[in-house]
Image (cartoon, rainbow, N blue to C red; front, side, top):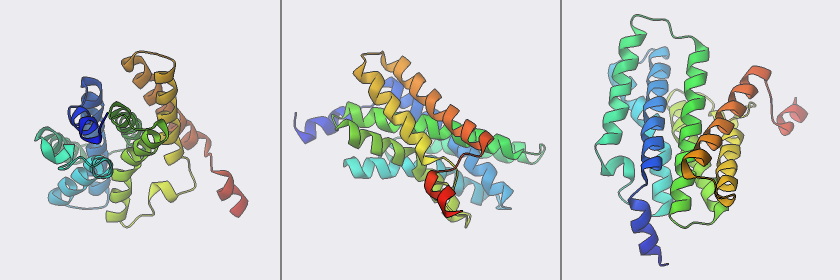
Length: 216
């Protein structure tokens, strides 16, 4: 199969990838907007941060895969989803106190959805499983990294807790599910659940990477 043929195939994402992408877009945009409002940004700042958080990882993935313009800019549904989520966050924040645990949970959910969507899209394009896993991780952590940079925070992937590792685990689970011949929906569900559960357990138990423990 030629590269151009692969590109045409991946340019038409499956329903599963589209749903995971849009779900991750909404969740990450909501989390990004809430983080922006928590940092005392105005509505415009929340919109910008929601867009960057939700779509940054996917844009990086598509650029690396040679899909130009990226899917996030090719259709109006992605920016619209991000901006709707930002508006929802703005409305909620003005009336309800947002607990930090909710932000962590939303971030873990977005991480899981994007890790699955990115890996699935790469696999559907015919890329090697290792490359697909790496692109899944990039999709999951890219937007959050941009968000943290905009807020002048140390990016989550460089902190001591498990973050990118959770995305890596979910992507690997998806690859193994594909190898075992499980249905696409079941494999994606198991992979997203694996990523989400690992991330939340890591937060709950304060797990750290071995190198960080040695450094402390």
